[in-house]
Image (cartoon, rainbow, N blue to C red):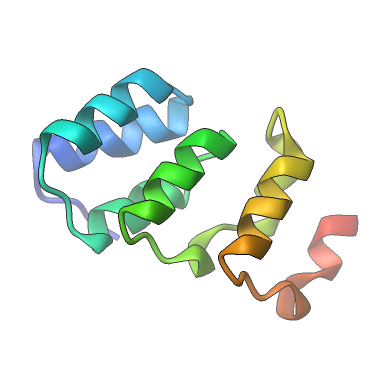
Length: 97
């Protein structure tokens, strides 16, 4: 998904880098649509950032299960995804890989 705005790119990079403070600041001070939040969610590993992006309309379906073990809090991330009705059945085998 392409982001056309500079602020959208900053959100994507901060989410990817796990910079909770920058993500929080950007979300609080700029207008984002669900597409911006969804683009950033695809590379976020920090559960706090994932929660913020989901609260701003990101589509939970874009989270790749293969990234969960890379998180510092994989259990918390799985619980968060379950709260937001992530469909684990379709890719559940990926967690074991």
